[in-house]
Every structure is written in C-alpha cells, then in structure tokens.
Length: 199
Length: 288
Image 1 (cartoon, rainbow over the protein chains, first blue to last red):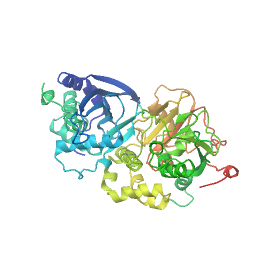
Image 2 (cartoon, one colour):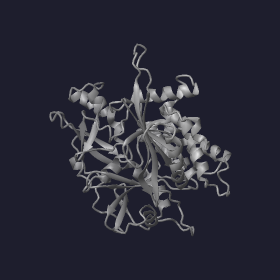
Image 3 (tube, rainbow over the protein chains, first blue to last red):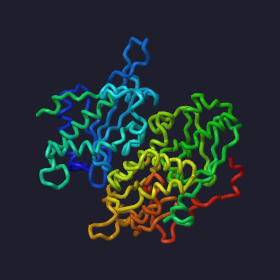
Image 4 (cartoon, helix red, strand yellow):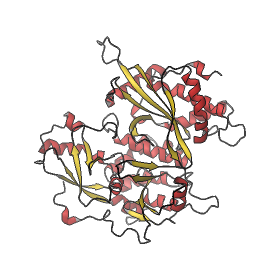
C-alpha cells in the first residue's frame, strides 16, 4: 500500500476543517455528528442533505426529476479511508426504488467519467447496507479501491512528515479527504467547487 | 486442515428448524425448513414466494411478494445478519424450536431493513462483508487477488451448502498472519434496538501473548464492569479463550466472528441449556 495511512483520529481532527471548507462554498445544511464509538475514539461523520437532478424518467418528461440525497461522510477503520453512506429519495421523502437508485448513481458516474453504458459493473461496488453505527439501510460504495487512492493523495501532499506511516498533519488530512470527496461525491451528484481546496 | 468432524464443519452444518407462517391469511399452511445457521434468510425468498403463490394465491411478481419481509416476536428480522446470529439475539431468550417466523407482504419497513433484490443482491452484500474482513486481516490483498470466479465459488458454496466448494477458496482468506481480527459484538436491547460494537483488535497483546476475549471486551467497552458472557453459534465462550483461536474455529462464512453479549458469567462447561444446535425432531411435521 503506497503512502501513509489515514487513521480515525486524524479523520476526526480533519472534519472541522473539511466542514469549514465546504460550508463556505455549498449552500446546503452541513453538520458534524458523533454516531457512535470505536473503543475510546468517537465515530464521527459530516452529514449533509441536498437536491440534485435525477436521471430523466423518460424522454417525454419535460419536468426535471429531482432526487433528495442524504449524505454521510464517515471513516472506515477496516480500510483506513473515508467512506460514503447515502439515502436517495424523491423530494417528498419516499425512498427511490432500488432500480432508480442504481440508475441515479450510474448516470452520475458515467457523466463524470465518460465510461460507456454497460461497461461499469455497478453491482460490484454499490450496495445497500446497514449503516455500521446507525443500523439504518443506506447505500455505500465499496471502499476497496479507495485506500489506494488516499495513499497516493497523502503521499503527494507529504502528510507523513515524521515517517510514522500515519497521517499526522490535519491540513494534509483535510485536503486528502476533500480530494477523495471531489472524486467519489460525483457518484451522488455532489460537485465540490475547486475553491474549497484553496486556503 | 478441516476434517469432517472438525469444529469448522460442525459450525457449518448447524441448522435451525424454522416454521414460516402468514398471519395475514391463517388458512395458508406453514412452510417448514431446516435453515443453516450460517446462512441468510433472503436466500429463501424465492422459496417463500413459491409457497405463497401455491397456497395463498399471491402471484410471485405481485408487489406483495416482491416486498416480502420477515418478522419474529413482533420485530422485523434484520436479515442481513446470519440466521443463527438472529436466533441467538432473540430476547429474552432464544424461542422454542421450530422457530416461528412471520411472513409479511405489506408495509416493508424501508427505514429499518435492507432490501435485497435484483438491484441489491445478497451475493454482493456477502462479498462486501468478505472484502471488509480481508481489509482488516490482509489490507484486502487476498480478496483482491482472487478473481470473480473464486468470489462466485464462495457464494455458491454457501448457497448450496457445499462445505468443500466453499472451504477450498475460504482457506486462502483464513490462513496467514492477520493484522486485525474481524469480529462484531452484538447486544439486543429490551426495546428491540441492536447495538453493534466493532473495533481494531490485533491477535496478540503488546507482550506477544494471545489476546483473549476478556482483553477484547476491555478494548471495546473500556468502562464496562458488569459480568458478561460472549456467545457464538449458541455456545458461551470462556473469557480466557484466545481471540485468534475463536476466530479460526468459529468465524462465520462471511469471515467475521459474530459474538453475542449476554449478562452474567459463563460456566466453564458452556451453556448446557442451549437447544440452539440441537434439532427437536419430534416437532418437525413436514420438511419441504
């Protein structure tokens, strides 16, 4: 695994900075929440909620379809990297049907990456799972490749200045999480403005 | 190596007699099934739908059949958890066998239950669990080195009750030095709420002696002082059991050691009253 590892404590310490960087640029409600504990360390998340355009229901629809996204940005100790959990519903709160949820993510990913329809094996990376602390069903993207990405991002930012193999610099951790969110957030229609990574 | 009478094989072979009833229509006969403790209830959805189609006139493609869910003792069954774990969690104590489980075709509790279906398969969820377990043990190196064919074999082995088919691949995940051991500790509250504890636990203490279940409890619940027992597969474990040993012998096919926290001390002989691993054959009328 390349690059220093992010720890839950480093992630927790970076969250207020992440919140500050995002809430200045995005007009949605955002909050830090403690959702549980892992031994002595609190399990914290950045939680937000926003409306985005959904995949078009069909060609004849003139009204834009809106999707309410409830997003929890948390940390996976198993993978030592950030993880997204999200709920998708119609603006009135009715959860999207599973097929519509999969379409929503697929359309967002394809429009970001330009990958042709059908080539992306969404089923192998998108699952509805119980939230690890809250227990309620939420969608998540399997973090299996994320750890690699974070490792490369933290390497690039010299986050491991004391050579301990762990990210100690809060600023570097916040920027790494922000860079990760810029990539993964696109799956749920979240566009992180570039200005968020400036001081 | 796993021999036919090994602990791992006995864990795999453990089954629970379950009686599925449809309270919405008492004229529908119950469906009896011997369900593997290490398996999952959503794997039975097709059989349940076929039963409802045959006996309750509920078409398999109807919304009722598609939105089917299960209840026990008045609460939704959290069917992403293995069957045996769900049984062991029932309060105040595991129900008499056969375990009566209700089939529901209305009011799917979307804010409580994961929905399994063509867009969210149980197989993909099982793989998600395996990946997380391997991330803890081996930084996901072993599971990522396996191809899709081996991932499928693990699932098919579990689905079809084929221990050898499953084990030949699972052995790769279970062998070698583990960085952290995958486990979860569950505590069912009286109000029906479930608390799940998970933290990073190495196989050894700082002084290289094996980490025990006592140590684990102290790591996960630092300020907890009440006497408690940890149980799995219906059996209480002595607190001096090394975690690594318990993991190797008693982990579920999803590669997690699922432990139930119970109040009170463990007798060294284990819980002799537990009928969880024994079949009460006199009560099984029809097995379909």
